[in-house]
Amino acid sequence: MAEAGDRGAGFDERLVAAALAVLEDNGLAGLTMGRVAERFGGSRMTLHRHGVTRENVIVRLAALAAQEYRDAIWPALTSPQPAVDRLRMALEETC
Image 1 (cartoon, rainbow, N blue to C red):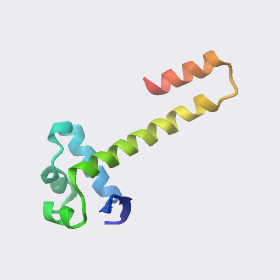
Image 2: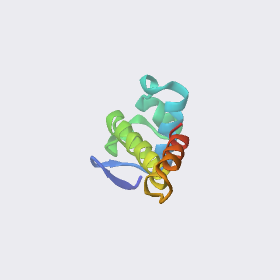
Image 3: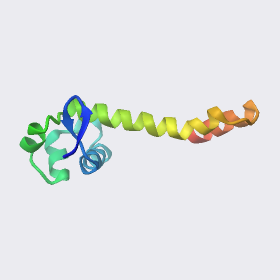
C-alpha cells in the first residue's frame, strides 16, 4: 500500500475503492475494518499494520468527497457568465 500522508496510514486506490463499496452497501454504521479488509482482499491485521483505521478511512473518504465537490462546483464559481447562470450551474452540479 502506498503512503498517502493520512495520519501515517497506507492508502491506495484499491483500498479506497473497497471502503467506498462497503460504505455504499452498508452505510456509515456498517463501515467496519473487517468488511473493508474483505473487500480489499486482505486481513484486518494487514490494514492495522499499515496504520489503517476506521477513523482515517472516514477522513480519507470525506476528503475525496470534498475534492469531488470542489472540482464540480469550481467552473460555476469562476465562470464569467452572469450570476443567474452561475447559480444555475452550481445548483445543477450540487443536485
